[in-house]
Image (cartoon, rainbow over all chains, first blue to last red; front, side, top):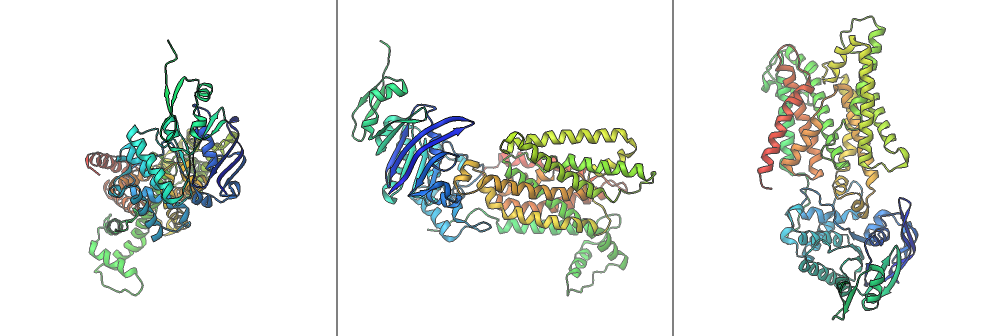
Length: 258
Length: 352
């Protein structure tokens, strides 16, 4: 059974069609990355798949139709790390990670010992124990990104949706965060669906890549099948050279002039 | 590995809040036109508990002043202060706007218009002789405040838009401006009532026995119960609606519940006390700077320290001006603003 099944997904924002009939399948434990030029509808599609936006079509998580699921059930099944999440002023790292346990805490209730243990465990998994008592707004970009991941991890969901998880990081921290995600995926059997801008990085870490352009899927498959000079020239209007790498093709933009 | 605790209400802060309320109560009872010994006052308070019988050394007349005149007023001050501070903290959390305060959604102007209307109509009906405010004033203030919030609410969704926090605030500004204009017009036509209207608008706690306390009490209980039950949700709301939703919350529903509860509490407080500004901003902000921004600690502490703050300012309002009582709204602003600046400055420099 697929972890995520998307059929004929359409999303309109303010009457404009942003996502236009997208079909997508992510197998259990797979990492699929959605790429596409600015405005292609990557983030919108991801948010709809995460159940944050009204949509047309059908979305299933682990075979369950999302439209019929309660908010809390959704939050237990899918965790999202949005692009540039809000950093609440003055909140401690531990308290922020503990917010991930919200779907498990009954109304009027408080965190159980299991919730506290889950938050602790997420901190350990992401090497954040020394930061537990620090204020989130005092951490560096790479540290914050790890905290956002820790909150998603504490949510205990089998599906992880990442919207541009590395766009605010330098190349070293990009690698660190993506390696972490890949390790967690292997250890916990997580399914990862991400959007990314950096094509080489996308190819390095994804099992499959989906190229979105103007709200439609125009190419899908292994990184080397999607990241071709012809595909990128057509949809990004860019001249690139593709160099075969160990995990996926490396994409280098080259000058178009003489 | 030690299991970490979530940021909650620290016992030390809770104790500090309770002590502040007790001190404010004793002082508020002891001082006034007839000073009473604070020790005797404390003993008399213990005597109010069932099964306690101690000698306080106060005369019968002094005991009467204490329990019939001062106690209702101090209790009213505690209730109003607690409600205003709690409502302020709730609005600031629900709107994710540090400047949100209980008067934001038209509460103040609605109450003002209601009171003006009643006083003006009452004055023209009963050939002068206005010694006190008409009986209908609290009811009019309450109706005006609730009506204004309802209007803000409806306008905030005009045109089928979502009631986003920003739209609601803008609708509140429009409603406030409109109702204030209506109030000014009414006053202009009935200049003889200006004095009565202003004495209410500047804020006052009456000494008319337990009636006002009983009027506010049910609203205070309901507001506190609802807002305090939502304090964890308020913390989740700090990450924004999209993420709160991805965590399984219904952000708009939680927000509306908080706004309705806080508005009801504010309207009840305003109806008995008039417009007392600053409490809803200063108390929560000071606590945020001193005790941390987590709503789980902030909301209960706002109740305690808001109560103590208003009881103390009411004491100043009664005593500082000699025979003439200073309007309590003036005192809260006079004291609150500089104190707030002080806290702001010192906490900027302190490392956290």
